[in-house]
Length: 283
Image (cartoon, rainbow, N blue to C red; front, side, top):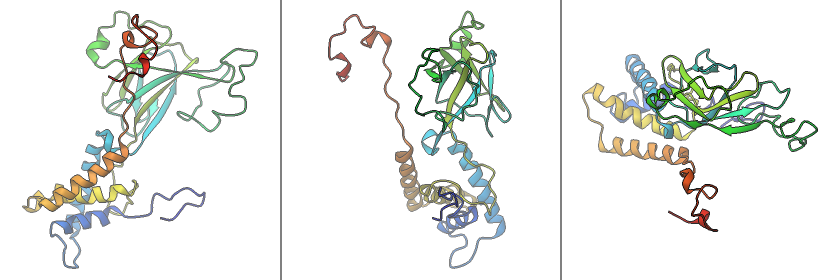
Protein backbone atom coordinates (compact mmCIF):
# COMPACT_ATOMS: atom_id res chain seq x y z
CA UNK A 1 0.00 0.00 0.00
CA UNK A 2 1.42 3.34 -1.00
CA UNK A 3 2.36 5.94 1.56
CA UNK A 4 1.38 9.59 1.75
CA UNK A 5 3.93 12.35 1.14
CA UNK A 6 4.31 13.01 4.86
CA UNK A 7 5.30 9.39 5.52
CA UNK A 8 1.96 8.26 6.99
CA UNK A 9 0.04 5.40 5.39
CA UNK A 10 -2.34 6.42 2.62
CA UNK A 11 -5.67 4.99 3.77
CA UNK A 12 -7.46 5.87 0.51
CA UNK A 13 -5.70 3.17 -1.54
CA UNK A 14 -7.04 -0.35 -1.88
CA UNK A 15 -10.59 -1.37 -2.81
CA UNK A 16 -13.50 0.89 -3.66
CA UNK A 17 -17.11 0.32 -2.63
CA UNK A 18 -18.06 -0.98 -6.09
CA UNK A 19 -15.16 -3.47 -6.00
CA UNK A 20 -16.41 -5.12 -2.81
CA UNK A 21 -20.08 -4.93 -3.81
CA UNK A 22 -19.26 -6.62 -7.11
CA UNK A 23 -17.27 -9.37 -5.36
CA UNK A 24 -20.12 -9.90 -2.87
CA UNK A 25 -22.65 -10.26 -5.69
CA UNK A 26 -20.46 -12.79 -7.46
CA UNK A 27 -20.45 -14.96 -4.33
CA UNK A 28 -24.20 -15.43 -4.82
CA UNK A 29 -24.03 -15.86 -8.60
CA UNK A 30 -24.86 -12.32 -9.70
CA UNK A 31 -22.48 -11.06 -12.38
CA UNK A 32 -20.49 -14.30 -12.49
CA UNK A 33 -18.58 -15.83 -15.42
CA UNK A 34 -16.73 -12.64 -16.31
CA UNK A 35 -19.77 -10.36 -16.46
CA UNK A 36 -20.34 -7.26 -14.37
CA UNK A 37 -23.33 -6.61 -12.08
CA UNK A 38 -25.98 -4.24 -13.39
CA UNK A 39 -25.92 -0.66 -12.04
CA UNK A 40 -29.16 -1.22 -10.06
CA UNK A 41 -27.55 -4.24 -8.38
CA UNK A 42 -24.52 -2.15 -7.43
CA UNK A 43 -26.77 0.67 -6.17
CA UNK A 44 -28.64 -1.78 -3.93
CA UNK A 45 -25.31 -3.12 -2.68
CA UNK A 46 -24.14 0.37 -1.75
CA UNK A 47 -27.32 0.95 0.26
CA UNK A 48 -26.85 -2.38 2.02
CA UNK A 49 -23.23 -1.47 2.80
CA UNK A 50 -24.17 1.87 4.37
CA UNK A 51 -26.92 0.26 6.44
CA UNK A 52 -24.58 -2.52 7.52
CA UNK A 53 -21.86 -0.09 8.62
CA UNK A 54 -24.48 1.87 10.59
CA UNK A 55 -25.23 -1.38 12.46
CA UNK A 56 -21.54 -2.12 12.97
CA UNK A 57 -21.15 1.35 14.49
CA UNK A 58 -23.16 0.16 17.51
CA UNK A 59 -20.98 -2.90 18.12
CA UNK A 60 -17.82 -1.88 19.88
CA UNK A 61 -15.82 -4.88 18.70
CA UNK A 62 -16.48 -3.92 15.06
CA UNK A 63 -15.20 -0.35 15.43
CA UNK A 64 -11.44 -0.17 14.83
CA UNK A 65 -10.66 2.78 17.07
CA UNK A 66 -11.71 4.72 20.15
CA UNK A 67 -11.32 8.49 20.06
CA UNK A 68 -10.91 11.08 22.80
CA UNK A 69 -13.09 14.19 22.42
CA UNK A 70 -13.01 17.17 24.75
CA UNK A 71 -14.80 20.38 25.58
CA UNK A 72 -14.09 23.06 28.21
CA UNK A 73 -16.29 23.35 31.26
CA UNK A 74 -18.66 26.30 31.08
CA UNK A 75 -20.49 25.71 34.35
CA UNK A 76 -23.42 24.17 32.46
CA UNK A 77 -25.23 21.06 33.66
CA UNK A 78 -25.54 19.52 30.15
CA UNK A 79 -23.03 19.26 27.30
CA UNK A 80 -24.09 18.01 23.87
CA UNK A 81 -22.33 15.38 21.75
CA UNK A 82 -23.16 15.42 18.06
CA UNK A 83 -23.04 17.62 14.95
CA UNK A 84 -22.14 21.16 16.04
CA UNK A 85 -22.36 20.23 19.73
CA UNK A 86 -19.96 20.86 22.59
CA UNK A 87 -18.35 17.54 21.64
CA UNK A 88 -18.48 18.18 17.91
CA UNK A 89 -18.71 14.94 15.89
CA UNK A 90 -20.59 13.82 12.75
CA UNK A 91 -22.97 11.49 14.63
CA UNK A 92 -23.94 11.33 18.27
CA UNK A 93 -22.43 8.29 20.03
CA UNK A 94 -24.77 5.61 21.34
CA UNK A 95 -22.64 5.34 24.46
CA UNK A 96 -19.68 6.93 26.17
CA UNK A 97 -17.15 4.20 26.91
CA UNK A 98 -15.30 6.25 29.54
CA UNK A 99 -14.91 9.85 30.65
CA UNK A 100 -12.59 11.95 32.73
CA UNK A 101 -12.29 15.55 33.87
CA UNK A 102 -9.02 17.43 33.45
CA UNK A 103 -8.19 20.00 36.09
CA UNK A 104 -6.32 22.61 34.11
CA UNK A 105 -3.14 24.25 35.30
CA UNK A 106 -3.33 27.86 36.36
CA UNK A 107 -3.43 30.05 33.28
CA UNK A 108 -3.95 27.11 30.89
CA UNK A 109 -6.71 27.44 28.34
CA UNK A 110 -8.74 24.45 27.22
CA UNK A 111 -7.12 23.91 23.83
CA UNK A 112 -5.98 20.29 24.10
CA UNK A 113 -6.57 18.02 21.10
CA UNK A 114 -7.69 14.95 23.00
CA UNK A 115 -6.05 12.54 25.37
CA UNK A 116 -2.38 13.33 24.77
CA UNK A 117 -1.62 16.20 22.44
CA UNK A 118 1.85 16.82 21.04
CA UNK A 119 2.79 19.32 23.75
CA UNK A 120 1.61 17.28 26.71
CA UNK A 121 5.03 15.85 27.48
CA UNK A 122 8.16 17.97 27.62
CA UNK A 123 11.17 18.58 29.82
CA UNK A 124 9.14 20.52 32.38
CA UNK A 125 6.40 17.95 32.84
CA UNK A 126 7.34 17.12 36.41
CA UNK A 127 8.56 20.54 37.51
CA UNK A 128 6.01 21.74 40.04
CA UNK A 129 7.48 25.24 40.06
CA UNK A 130 6.61 27.99 42.50
CA UNK A 131 2.86 27.67 41.93
CA UNK A 132 2.64 24.11 43.25
CA UNK A 133 1.62 20.83 41.69
CA UNK A 134 -0.62 22.23 38.96
CA UNK A 135 1.92 24.61 37.46
CA UNK A 136 2.13 23.40 33.87
CA UNK A 137 0.73 19.99 34.80
CA UNK A 138 -3.01 19.46 34.34
CA UNK A 139 -4.34 16.47 36.28
CA UNK A 140 -6.97 14.02 35.05
CA UNK A 141 -9.67 12.52 37.28
CA UNK A 142 -11.74 9.56 36.16
CA UNK A 143 -15.51 10.04 36.16
CA UNK A 144 -17.73 7.18 37.27
CA UNK A 145 -20.69 6.52 34.93
CA UNK A 146 -24.25 6.73 36.23
CA UNK A 147 -25.77 3.74 34.41
CA UNK A 148 -29.35 4.88 33.79
CA UNK A 149 -31.63 7.90 33.65
CA UNK A 150 -33.53 6.46 36.61
CA UNK A 151 -30.36 6.60 38.71
CA UNK A 152 -29.61 10.13 37.54
CA UNK A 153 -33.18 11.17 38.33
CA UNK A 154 -32.65 9.84 41.86
CA UNK A 155 -29.97 12.44 42.62
CA UNK A 156 -31.43 14.74 45.25
CA UNK A 157 -29.35 17.83 44.47
CA UNK A 158 -28.69 17.78 40.72
CA UNK A 159 -27.46 21.38 40.75
CA UNK A 160 -24.66 20.71 43.26
CA UNK A 161 -21.58 22.65 42.13
CA UNK A 162 -18.21 21.36 43.24
CA UNK A 163 -15.57 18.82 42.20
CA UNK A 164 -16.96 16.45 39.47
CA UNK A 165 -17.05 12.72 40.24
CA UNK A 166 -19.78 11.18 38.07
CA UNK A 167 -21.42 11.56 34.68
CA UNK A 168 -24.60 10.41 33.01
CA UNK A 169 -24.83 10.12 29.23
CA UNK A 170 -28.26 10.19 27.59
CA UNK A 171 -28.01 9.03 23.93
CA UNK A 172 -30.67 11.45 22.71
CA UNK A 173 -30.93 12.12 18.97
CA UNK A 174 -29.59 14.07 17.12
CA UNK A 175 -27.31 15.17 19.96
CA UNK A 176 -26.47 13.11 23.03
CA UNK A 177 -26.49 14.71 26.49
CA UNK A 178 -23.42 14.50 28.72
CA UNK A 179 -24.34 15.46 32.29
CA UNK A 180 -21.48 15.78 34.80
CA UNK A 181 -22.22 15.63 38.50
CA UNK A 182 -21.45 17.52 40.64
CA UNK A 183 -21.25 20.45 38.22
CA UNK A 184 -17.76 22.04 38.13
CA UNK A 185 -17.16 25.78 37.64
CA UNK A 186 -16.29 27.28 34.29
CA UNK A 187 -12.77 27.58 32.86
CA UNK A 188 -10.98 25.43 35.48
CA UNK A 189 -11.98 22.07 33.99
CA UNK A 190 -12.04 20.24 30.68
CA UNK A 191 -14.28 17.23 30.00
CA UNK A 192 -13.02 14.30 27.93
CA UNK A 193 -15.15 11.46 26.60
CA UNK A 194 -13.97 8.21 25.01
CA UNK A 195 -16.28 7.10 22.21
CA UNK A 196 -16.12 4.69 19.24
CA UNK A 197 -14.80 6.25 16.06
CA UNK A 198 -17.52 7.08 13.53
CA UNK A 199 -17.71 4.61 10.63
CA UNK A 200 -18.57 5.91 7.14
CA UNK A 201 -22.28 5.51 6.36
CA UNK A 202 -22.71 7.82 3.35
CA UNK A 203 -20.51 5.96 0.88
CA UNK A 204 -21.03 6.00 -2.88
CA UNK A 205 -19.98 3.37 -5.42
CA UNK A 206 -16.72 5.14 -6.30
CA UNK A 207 -15.59 5.88 -2.73
CA UNK A 208 -12.56 4.04 -1.29
CA UNK A 209 -13.00 1.75 1.70
CA UNK A 210 -11.24 3.83 4.33
CA UNK A 211 -10.96 1.04 6.89
CA UNK A 212 -8.16 -1.34 7.94
CA UNK A 213 -7.43 -4.12 5.39
CA UNK A 214 -8.97 -6.86 7.54
CA UNK A 215 -12.34 -5.18 7.00
CA UNK A 216 -12.33 -5.81 3.24
CA UNK A 217 -12.97 -9.53 3.60
CA UNK A 218 -15.58 -9.03 6.33
CA UNK A 219 -17.46 -6.45 4.26
CA UNK A 220 -17.46 -8.63 1.13
CA UNK A 221 -18.74 -11.81 2.81
CA UNK A 222 -21.19 -9.96 5.08
CA UNK A 223 -22.67 -8.19 2.05
CA UNK A 224 -23.03 -11.50 0.23
CA UNK A 225 -24.97 -12.99 3.16
CA UNK A 226 -27.04 -9.84 3.56
CA UNK A 227 -27.97 -9.48 -0.13
CA UNK A 228 -28.76 -13.12 -0.90
CA UNK A 229 -32.47 -12.84 0.11
CA UNK A 230 -32.90 -9.99 -2.41
CA UNK A 231 -32.27 -12.55 -5.14
CA UNK A 232 -34.49 -15.27 -3.71
CA UNK A 233 -31.61 -17.16 -2.12
CA UNK A 234 -30.50 -18.33 1.27
CA UNK A 235 -26.87 -17.59 2.07
CA UNK A 236 -24.90 -20.77 1.41
CA UNK A 237 -23.04 -22.52 4.25
CA UNK A 238 -19.77 -21.39 2.65
CA UNK A 239 -20.85 -17.72 2.73
CA UNK A 240 -22.12 -17.98 6.31
CA UNK A 241 -18.92 -19.67 7.52
CA UNK A 242 -16.69 -17.14 5.75
CA UNK A 243 -18.72 -14.26 7.22
CA UNK A 244 -18.38 -15.60 10.77
CA UNK A 245 -14.65 -16.20 10.30
CA UNK A 246 -14.01 -12.68 8.96
CA UNK A 247 -16.00 -11.03 11.76
CA UNK A 248 -14.18 -13.16 14.35
CA UNK A 249 -10.87 -11.86 12.99
CA UNK A 250 -12.01 -8.26 13.48
CA UNK A 251 -13.39 -9.07 16.93
CA UNK A 252 -10.08 -10.55 18.09
CA UNK A 253 -8.14 -7.58 16.69
CA UNK A 254 -10.38 -4.91 18.24
CA UNK A 255 -11.29 -6.48 21.58
CA UNK A 256 -10.15 -4.48 24.61
CA UNK A 257 -11.14 -5.68 28.07
CA UNK A 258 -10.86 -3.07 30.84
CA UNK A 259 -9.36 -3.98 34.20
CA UNK A 260 -11.93 -5.46 36.56
CA UNK A 261 -13.18 -2.92 39.07
CA UNK A 262 -13.85 -3.98 42.66
CA UNK A 263 -16.16 -2.54 45.33
CA UNK A 264 -14.41 -0.11 47.66
CA UNK A 265 -14.86 -2.43 50.65
CA UNK A 266 -12.69 -5.01 48.88
CA UNK A 267 -9.80 -2.67 48.07
CA UNK A 268 -6.77 -2.56 50.41
CA UNK A 269 -7.27 1.05 51.50
CA UNK A 270 -10.88 0.51 52.56
CA UNK A 271 -10.98 -3.12 53.61
CA UNK A 272 -10.90 -3.62 57.39
CA UNK A 273 -9.85 -7.23 56.78
CA UNK A 274 -6.85 -6.37 54.62
CA UNK A 275 -3.66 -8.40 54.97
CA UNK A 276 -0.37 -8.01 53.07
CA UNK A 277 -0.63 -9.77 49.73
CA UNK A 278 -4.43 -9.41 49.42
CA UNK A 279 -4.02 -7.22 46.33
CA UNK A 280 -2.41 -10.06 44.36
CA UNK A 281 -4.92 -12.75 45.30
CA UNK A 282 -7.02 -14.17 42.47
CA UNK A 283 -10.76 -14.51 42.70
